[in-house]
Image 1 (cartoon, rainbow, N blue to C red):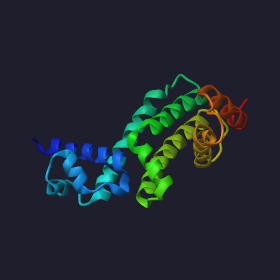
Image 2 (image 1 turned 180 degrees about the vertical axis):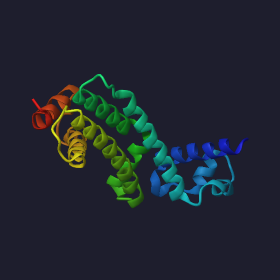
Image 3 (image 1 turned 135 degrees about the vertical axis):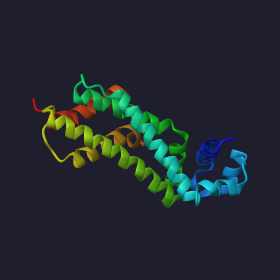
Image 4 (image 1 turned 60 degrees about the vertical axis):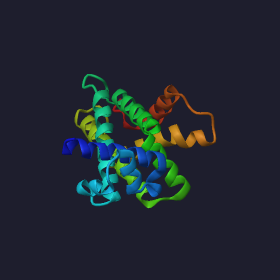
Amino acid sequence: MAVVDRRRQIVEAAEKSFALFGYKATTMDHVAKIANVAKGTIYTFFANKEELFDEILRSVIIEMKKITEQEVQDDRPFFENLYQSMDKLLEFRREHELLVKLFQEVRDFGTPQAREGLEKIELAILDYLERQIDRAAKHGEIREFDPKVIAFVLVKLYIALTSDWNKIHEPLSKEQIREFSQIFLSGGLSKT
């Protein structure tokens, strides 16, 4: 088996292990067993569990960026691109087994590494949104505000309406989330 294949095999096994057991309970022994390699083989590619975890987070972030890039179309208005992208990102976040496990681990145990991993993912989303907001402002589609602040508010609003709301109320449909987001945002950001 080629070196690249072994590395990929280890990363895939680690992602399965983190998704099954969480960050805290995953050991290099688990990863080695799932990958069907000797534990020492893992250390030829990764110095420790943290480095392996970071590699997986990088690939998740790359996957999320691809998803959003597929959704954005230059001929569509900013808000339509925004809603499509946020829907896909939040759907990905809800359905991706590793992310689901990390959210559960942070909620149940407060594992710092899991929290840091989720923060890296949120920062990647914020960075993406900030660039989209900046582009829309430069094209005159929205008013110019601090894109960092607007990106932060957008993410928190979407999380509040798609996740936090569901803890105490009947879940909102995508259409309702879009409608409420539009009420809260477009009136304040829209130039018209």
